[in-house]
Image (cartoon, rainbow, N blue to C red; front, side, top):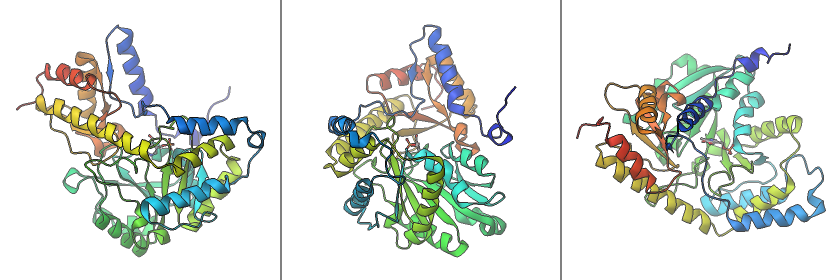
Length: 390
Ligand code: PLP
């Protein structure tokens, strides 16, 4: 009798749901499936954060409706964190918005800033949930390809003059999901110039900002001169503190964009459970040693996985950050037929690159979310299929 609205029905299908279904079906046959397909951090939240949350939960002051726009102490902690980590100065009142995870903000932003029929630019491949915001806000989509030969950074010269004129918003994401590519300061400078010239707002998704490899700390977009005039950055505690289930993040940067985000939040939401906001303060104010340990863990896993993959002649695209490996599909396969084959014949689940857009074709994404010896086992099984020439 009731059916979802047309807008809701126009939302893109969640390709991960399909992947999970296939993986479960394979596991139901009794196969020992090694799941490298998902992006769910496997480590627990550090104890000191859990304890801060428990303490705050016991305090009745945290049981009431809290301030609409979040705990001022958390906004201050976020601003202090950016000052310390990136030497970026933020006004906690006007340049920080507290969010229940960054996904909600990323999906709301087109609705908060654009009018139906406006155009926004998304990277291809890219995080699939960006598309939900496009559909909900009824805006037009312009894709810009991330190409391997350009280190998976977009080339704005590829956009038509029309697209440049009509676009109001551009999403970027480095370290990148799914490719693991990282941004350079030149690229970010170029982005500010492009945004200023075309009056386009930039949203930089910094979900993997804490996770950089080989001793490189990923750059915040806000470190770029002029960035705050044109854009905001989305930060989440999901990955850096293994708090994905807690739903806490924030946006920082351009005050007008932050105000629009706060405005939509006022209408849809009250605020994150105050005790979780207190725990987030503890995380941001900590000495960050748990983050350093986590980065070492992902680095070790990346290196272990690369070594095992190279042994069977499977050469990775070198990931500079995030917790993903971006692996080429062998000759004669598409990302989907290769993914299906790996699951069927080797009981190894990976995410097909085209699930992130047609720009992801030719690759599969491997999540570095399990330890050795499972990586070696996965690569051994794949090696037995003799797909790679050496
Ligand atoms: N952005 C990217 C690129 C992601 O990969 C994810 C989660 O996987 C998110 C945003 C959403 O993170 P959260 O909503 O947990 O803050």
